[in-house]
Length: 396
Image (tube, rainbow, N blue to C red; front, top):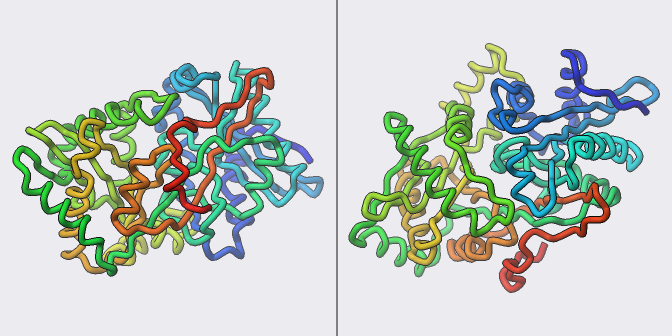
C-alpha cells in the first residue's frame, strides 16, 4: 500500500470519488456536493485557513485502487485554548482494514506532530461543528444534512488505533404528528406572554443584525460548556448562511430577546439530504434544475437543528420552549414537515438533554468524537466529565 498527498487535480478527484465507490451499495448514504468538500480545503473559501492549515491524503493498494482517504488540520487559536495542543482529522473513508486505516491515521498524526501538535481529535470538520462531526456508532439510518454517516466498522478502526472517547454526541428526533407533553406547552405559552420577551425569525434584509445577535449569544453560552472554547467570529456565520442559502427557510430560524437584547437562538434547516440523495454529489445544470424541482415538490419533509444557544442567565426561563412554540406555528402552516431532528447535543450538556426529553423527543442516533494522544507523555482527559449526568444519558 502507498499513501499519497492530495496535491493536484487528479488526486483531488480521487479523494472526492472514493465515497461513491465505498457506499455504492448502501442506500442510506448521501453524497455531499463535491464543491462543498473542495471548499473546505480552499484557503480562499474557508475562513479557518486564516489561522490554520490542512493537508489531505489518499491510500492506494498494490493494484492501484484507492482504498482510503483522510485529512488533518489545525487552528492555532483552538490549539492554544485546549489543555493540550490539539489538531483534528476528518473526511476519513476506508475499506474494512486495520492496516489501511492505521496508515491513514499515521499520516495525519505525523503531519500534526510536525506542526507542533500533541493530540488529534476526530473525526471532525475543518470548520464549525454543525457538519461532518463524529463517528456514527448508533442509529445507522439516513442522516440529516451535515450529519456524518459511516459503516459500523469505523468505530473499531478508530479505537483499534488508540483513539479514546472524548465525548458522545446525541441526536434526538421529534415526530411532529405526535402531541407535545401538556406541561411543555403551558411553559411555552407562558413565556410568550411574559413582559419584555419577544421572538423574531431571521430576515435577509436584517442579516447583519441577526449575525451580530447570534455571535453574541453563542459567545456567552459556550464558554460554560467547552473547556477549549474559542469565540465565534461573524465571518464564520456569514459563510454558513451563504452555504445554506439554497435551502434556508427564514421562518425556521428563531431568535429570542429580553428587552430587545438577544438571549437565545435556534437555527433549523430543511433536510437537504432528502434531495441530495438523488444528485450523487454533482451540481451540474441538470441537477440544479432537478434540485429546484424537488424543492418545489416539498420533498424535504424533515428539518434539522443546525445550531442553538441560550445565554446562561436565561437557561431556566423557559425561553427554549418559547422558540419551539413559535416553530410549531410555522409547521402548522407547512404540514409537509413531518419530523424534526434536534441539533446534536454533547453528553456534557445535561441541561439541553433534559430540554430535549421534555419535548417528548426520542434518542435516535449517537456519534463519538475521539481523541488520540500524539504525545504519549501527556495524559488523556475526557471532555468535561464532571458535567456528564449519567441519570439522563441515553442508553447507547
